[in-house]
Length: 165
Image (tube, rainbow, N blue to C red; front, side, top):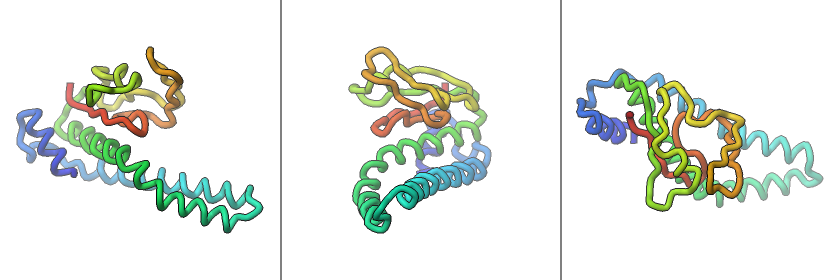
């Protein structure tokens, strides 16, 4: 996926894919951060069960079954969007791009994505900051932002992308 994104960005910027600085450091940091987040999430649930359940073995087995059945489908879109945008951000930085633009994908974007569409930030800035309850016009409820959002996705069904400004 990395090479595909790199080629697409090189075409967008009318540059050679070889012109970008090395993005291995960025990619390694991203992958470590992602693995740490996933591990902490599962470990937190396991600790919760062990500390609060009267039948921990049964509850752990149920949760692991659920994780095996539902997690892949639930997270596949989100992780694809997140990974491709993280790679894009790193490659834009490697090309020296200073500003990014949020682009809502599809004609039926949700109110959150519609309100972010066209927003620009510096490449080291966040589109939405951790702790924000984001509720644009047209949204029925706030979207809690649980970590700094440097790129899409904003939520589980988000298919937005970033591009150079």
